[in-house]
Each structure stands twice: as C-alpha cells, then as structure tokens.
Image (tube, rainbow, N blue to C red; front, side, top):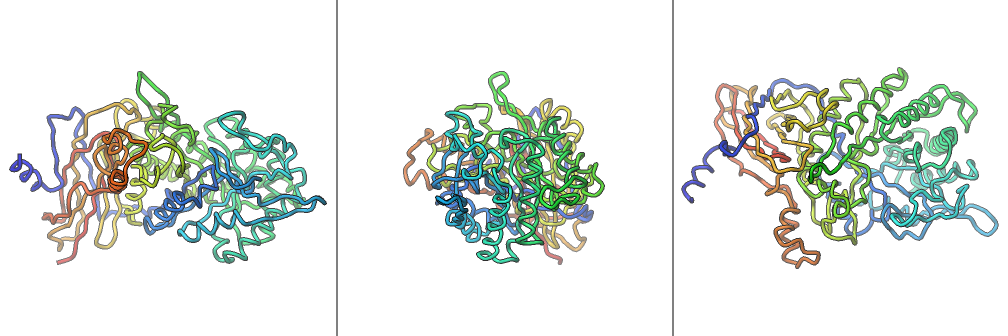
Length: 561
C-alpha cells in the first residue's frame, strides 16, 4: 500500500479511479492568453434577518473572517434596523429602538444599538448595505400586535405597516443618515447603498403599492437631503418569475421614471440602483432532497429583462438583494429535510453554478450587475449543524464559506475556458440540473498566476459517481518551462466540518479537542501539495477526478526563465 501511495503521489494533480466512474469524461480547455473581461466580485454580499446577531461574538467572528477573506470587501444587509424593541434577538426578529416618542408625542432618536451594529461593521472591515426598515411602533398605522414570535403565530405584525406620518418617517431617515455621517464620515457613508424596505409586494408591507411608492419617495428625499451623493434604491421585490412580483417591479420603475413624486410633487424619483430578489426551490423527491437552480435563474432572467426594458434605467447597478436556493433561512433542515444541502458541499457547488450563470445572464441582457446577496449568516445559541441557512455554526465554518474563500482567490482578469460537461444556459433555465450533472469552469489570471475553478453540481443530493476531468491549458509564455501547481478541494472529505462532525457521532456538546478538530476541518484544505510541473510549448495538461457536489481550485504560478 505504501508503494502504491508513493506512485500515486508522483502523478501531477492526478487521481483517476476510472473503474469507479460511470459519469462521462469531461474535457476542459483554458486559454491563458485570451482575456474575456473583468471578473466583478458580485458574490461579496451576505444578509440576515436578525440585526442583533451582528455584534454577538459569533457574528463578529464571522464578519471579521469575511472582512479579511480576500482583496474583495464584503457587504452585509440586515432586516429590522428601525424596529422597536430592547435589542434581544430571536429567529427572524431584531430591534434597535432607534425611534420612540415621549409623553408629549415628540420624536426621540436613540442610536445606541444601531451604532453597535455599524461599529461592528467598521471594526471588521464590512461595508454596510443599509436596508431602511422596518416601521417603528410609534409610527405604525397598526401597532398592535407589534412583536412577532415566529414560528408561533403570524410573522407580519405591526412592524410591517405604513407610517401614520410620512413626514416623521422621512425625518427619522434623514436624522439617521446625518448621524451616520457624523460618526463614520461622509466619504464612508456615500459608499453605502440605502435600500428602501424589503419585499413590499408580499406581507412585509401591509400597504398598497401606491403607499410603498410614497414611502420610497419620502425615504429617498430624506437620504438625499442629508447626503446628495448617497446611493438610494429599491424596491427589493420578490422573485420576478412570479407575475405579481414582476408587475410590482415594473410599476415601481415606471413610477421612478415618470410618476408624480409624493414627497416633492415633481416628476420621477431618485433611483441610483435597482434591487429585486431571486429564489430557488427545494423539495423531497423519492426520499432525497432535490434543489432547483433553474427556478432561481428564471427569477434572475425575468428581473434582468424588466430592467433592460427601461432605456433610461438599464445602465443602473442591479443588486439582487436576496439570492438563495430557497426562501427561509431560519427553517432548519432538521425540521425541513428538503434543506439538508445547507451543511454540505452541495451548497458550495451550487454557489459556483450561481456565480457563473448569474454573470452569464447579466451579459445576455446587457445589464449592470453590482452584486447578489447570499441570505445566510450565523445563528448563535442554536444547536450544532441544525441546518439553518448559515455560513458557520458555533464558530465552525461550513463548506459554503469555503466556496467564498475560493471565489476570493480568483484574479480580476477572466480568461476563456470551456467544458464539455457544462450544460447550456437555456437547458438550465428550462430543466435545471436534473438529467445529468453540470461540470463547469471559470478561469482567471494575473501577470504570473492563474486560477482554474472546476465544480461538479447536481440538483439531487443522492450519492453519484465522480467525473474524470482533463484540463488542457495553453497560452503560457514560451519562456516558461515549469509551473507551480496547487489544488484546493471542497468535497465530503475536504473542507467539510459537517462530515467530520457526523463522524464524531454528531455531538451537541463537543469537547474542546473536538471543537479544535472541527474548526480545522472547516478550513479550506489542500487536495494536492504545491509541485512544479513541466510545460511543453506553452501548454500543460492536468487530470483529476471530481466527485459530485465537489469544487476544485487549481492555482498556477510561474516565472519567466
């Protein structure tokens, strides 16, 4: 056995158990000398319902990781930034008590909890993506009941109603922006995006469409009074594949272009960016969990098409301010087995698919995609690997966080790369990834480096054979005789704390030694050690076997000789 392992180790980046594979061999071709444009870091946005988790020790640790994950800075979006309460977090709940009224009915502004949240962003290197919401109790037209106790009872309570006084609401927003400038500086605040509300086309807004447009106009006017150079936008509607959401988004954009502004009486409303949401679906099929990437891509495609249909708006940045495999981050996989992907490498490979396909759709519709928000954070105080949509559990990183680590290792210049195992975009939109897996690739380069990301994704969570993959690389400088190659891997045995936790017996009270092991297992791991490989006439060929739901990043470094 020792001799066999020694022989295998001598094969550059090559593990080829072909006899185990029923998946068709995949040929990948990478052209280092064919740049195709700049890779925008559109993945660098996260979000969560519970703003008070932001400054918890676990939340702060996660943000600190994201803030230093790569050269690309991360942004965070949270609900409930203006909700009334004592700051105690709960599922899908949080509060800051930013606005109350005294006995005489006069406004009282209290920035203590908001400052704690935004001070955490500043300390961890995170850029706020500011969601203006929800309605303070003293301003709600239907304040009772105000606090929800989801999942026991209704979610959409008094915080989801329009203001009883739009002027006071506008003053609150203006005071908030001015306070932010005073505390964090004009240069910083003008880099933030200010998004008005969340999903007003469903129960998050218990008002009419016209009332939301009024809320938007008064909010935008307030932001611009405080900081004319600030970015304000919306409407953060739900997935545009739903006709109701599509009509709502279209009506809002029409209002911003040609409608009467409720706050100023003029025509049109300030709009610096456009936002909407996109969700996939998960379900149980024949005893296993099945995802639906195609449905999420349909949301994105319909949203891009709507924006593109407005000639004066199509150049504006678009933020998909929630972009996820399904719609409920706080619905645990332990109770909803269709969400079991969340703890596994399948979530990581899904994110690789989402990144490349979202970029492809933006190019197809000629729109300006700024970013998309992964609605996942961390849930302090809840069971280990309970299956919430999160990036870590109890300070232990999940495989999906390693996907973001890998994305952060991609260089800014994208280069041509093709895969014979890649499904067409139209096929994905129509059939998702059901009939066969999708083996995709994205490649980038620097002056003396290149990164090749390959993944093997399937909507189905069933066990499946791996794919034999051959990567042909050309376009290396002719005076480069050798290349240093390193491979990172995410699969069931690498960069996967969940599998390590299960192998321990799924302890809910792991020992200090076990926690140390889990934290190590949760880090991005090498699959092959760095080694020098000979090139031939500017070309290099690599082989690997890629399991289903796995990702490999191959990093190449060279120097001219």
